[in-house]
Length: 280
Ligand code: PDD
Image (tube, rainbow, N blue to C red; front, side, top):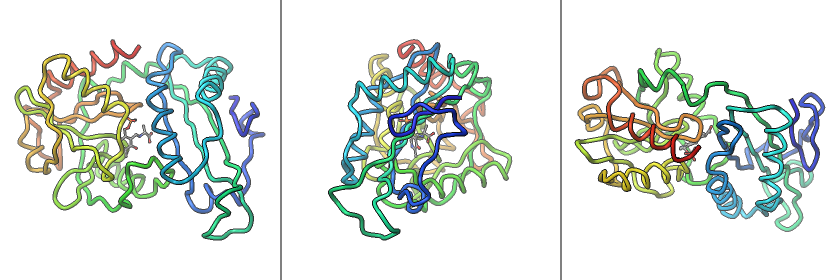
């Protein structure tokens, strides 16, 4: 596999980053995941806009132009023969000197890494037919979840807890209300209304979320942006999550209780179909 590091295309086993990089030592970096279907990037513009926002919130410069990001991603897709899969893009603050909490504000040179992961049959994931089961865990992340940092220890621990308990993911709960999934936004459905937490520093502003809410409104569904509890979700007609890599994924069980009929529902199924149809 060919990967991209700081302006160079290299075989993955020859690509290196300094052990002094602040991304490695301090999780001082941001990332994006863009899906590829039929060799085509999904919602590239949305992801690059959010990348630029994440960089600016952390006072990091943007090392490449939009066109450069696009060219690198297209080159990697081409070189690695990716039909279905994803592109990972990471920008860290680089290696400005000895390890120190402070960094020189002006002259850090960011580290830019991009690589592909093949996922054949990504859009036909059989899990979309059966749905995910989730558990709830306390949301112990920092309070700027709107910045897509590489600080992913707590979400990884929550995912491992879910796997250990035989389910697919964890929904994070703060002050009794669901924030989001470990790596996705969370929704419930009541009748014709889709309910999902409003945008704030508490959650990542999902690029898939924006697209799905737009498609939902266009399909005359109602959208309510507000918080909900696990009990309300368990009593809802349907639940689902969205992310760049899972698209729209139904959730059929929360903490051992069936959501609605305990089966994949019509609203999540329809939104998944619309999303895949519109984005391809
Ligand atoms: N995760 N919330 C969190 C905490 C996330 O990490 C993600 C994305 C989302 C959904 O955002 P989007 O629709 O833009 O993918 C919500 C990516 C896919 C990941 O970490 O792999």
